[in-house]
Amino acid sequence: MNKQDQKVLACVDQSHFADTVADYAAWAARRMEAPLEFLHVIDRHPEQGSGEDHSGAIGFNAQEHLLNDLSDKDAALARRQREQGRVFLNRLRERALAAGAPSADMRQRHGALDDTLAEQEDGVRLFVFGRRGASAEATQRDLGRNVERVVRAVHKPILTVTEGFKEPERVMLAYDGTAVTRKGVDMIASSPLFKGLPVHILMSGKESADGPKQLALARDTLTAAGFEVVADILPGDPEAVIAREVKARSIDMLLMGAYAHSPLRALVFGSRTTDLLRAATIPTLLMR
Image 1 (cartoon, rainbow, N blue to C red):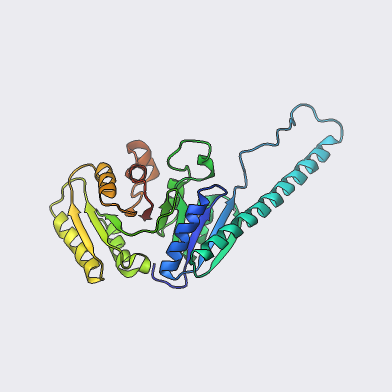
Image 2: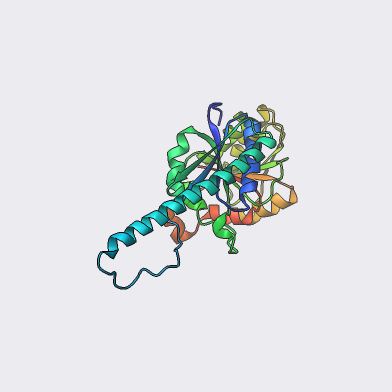
């Protein structure tokens, strides 16, 4: 996250959650002095129908006419989606510029969201993504259906945001001494994203003999980089401990490693990342 030519990529859909994504993306772009781009992906195969009945027998020479009619309707729908997307993205772009983003661009693509983001990854410094989106507008789902698939598809940090923007004043790193969370310490130390903010480092879960040593190294690294650091080892289930401490310490943003195991293992044994995302109701920066 220290290449100045790389952008913040905000992934948005046409839901009211997009405003929060725009606000956090603008905050990140401003802090890192990075260009911002809004990306709207239009599904090639939307789960919708025209409501017309095309079943039954097709009369003589009618098949070609029907196919042409359907093709024209598909083309008209695509044009309407692109125009709606352009107006939607332009509003978010103006919102981000007003919030202090150095620059903001916008792009629309057709395809699958996870494939599209993987294609864009080389030019991205940070992804910003809503934990909920259009699919959650009519449901009570607390975590959007795309979150795990998208996070597994890319290898750059992803800031997953909840509804409603609050400029972060203190952050917490869920630290377990693994390579990905050690990388998180280095990222915090070297990136301007969190400069000047107090950082809480929290270890929880199973006790480890070298836990205190690992925690001290993380604390010393951030202290040497000029951060005010609070470092603790607290026993207990990580999900419960982190949720409790986030609330008790008024933490505004959580950082943690994400989806270290395969999707099959997560299916069989459950996903700790997903559990933590549900427990921590604040924006969470996921590191792969």
